[in-house]
Image (cartoon, rainbow, N blue to C red; front, side):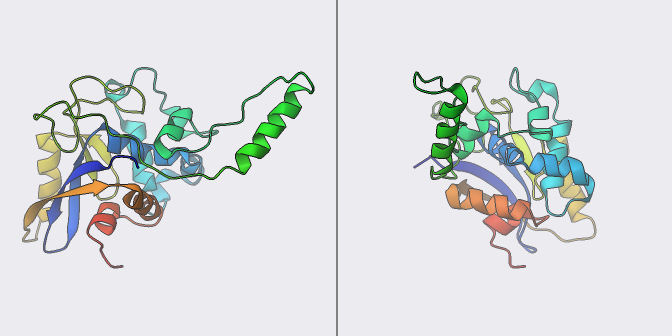
Length: 228
């Protein structure tokens, strides 16, 4: 079973609403990888700004993410305009590998590829989260940014804490951005803020995918069990 990912949520307790989550590389890589499920191509065709749910904001987050936060060699176009499932996404979602082209002695390369493709279609697929890296000591922080070295693979860099809003808007975490969001939410309202620590496993991952396709309050729906 894949290790769970820890998140720290800032919750407005009166309205039972998540303002944002403090997240590390593993969670951001996971939510970005949702765009490799052919959703990115749909977002581009129908215009991300008019999509229902939170996928449009997730799409824009990838588009606006600065190159300095991306892994070396990472190409945003693979998320924004995916043709086929990116190999890195298989590590995040544990899907079967694409059929390899094998030249057999008794048949053509095309025939061998066809056999592989048929075998792949019969393979059961499991939806899992990426494995969290080993803790780097007692100083490691919940939600990311605590690893001793730079993690490889995925889409964004480690050693950075990211802010993920209720509608899956992802930006590098900063005091200014968090205060601005809190002030925006509290205008004209009496707010009561509390921290909540949650774990993201397979069930939560599937819940995030479902909510992202239909909701503007994804984190609240999944982690606070908000009723529609």
